[in-house]
Amino acid sequence: MAQELNALLFGATGMVGRGVLRECLRDPDVQLVQTVGRTATGTQHPKLKEIVYPDLWHYAPIEPDLSGFDACFFCLGVSAAGMTEDDYERVTYGITMAAAETLIRLNPGMTFIYVSGAGTDSSERGRTMWARVKGKTENALMRLPFKGAYMFRPALIHSLHGESTKTPAYRLAYAVIRPLFPALRWALPNSVTTTEEIGRAMLAVARHGAPKPILESSDISAIGRADVRPDAKDSAS
Image (cartoon, rainbow, N blue to C red):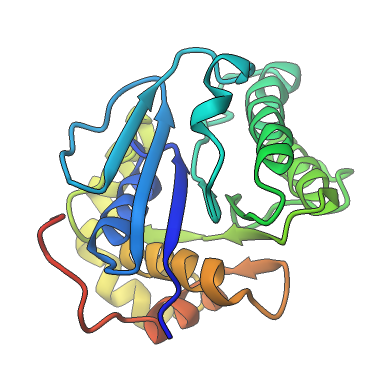
């Protein structure tokens, strides 16, 4: 029997978030997808609700709109380039945990899926600043008593439907390597995944869980490829 889902999506205007939004809107079992972010997505769909909200560290004013959800797909993130560790931690750890601690209180049966990144440092003691902060964030999320908390660690991401990163340097890099993705997928099958596979994998993990809490790029691709929905709608394209 199909499992209906009401999903919250943070970071829906970024590359990964846009891919996840597309898959949510195409999936017939998703009844509602509600985005939370500082800007609107520009997408219109009968099962899409958007909350444009500027203060992502404090959710009390919108708490009534954050209950009744089965899953949270947290795709919000910033580049660490040019940031001090304190500033990067305030955004990466602070915003994520403010949302998660609110949501666990309002939706104790929720599955929380966090987009981290390949190379994240679970020890929190390595040399790379962003990896330490991401590791601290992952570890804190896994200590919360969600129904399930899963950390997605994609490496190279191939956007298939025009999704684009907001970071100018990353946009330039993606423009350069985009034609190479088919060859990279062949040469590095464990390091390349697609926005479609990430979105489908999130939905599959929200429905059924996963055998481990940390999912690397190859795990994400395998789950995403296995969860192709033959009755998915293309109206969200």
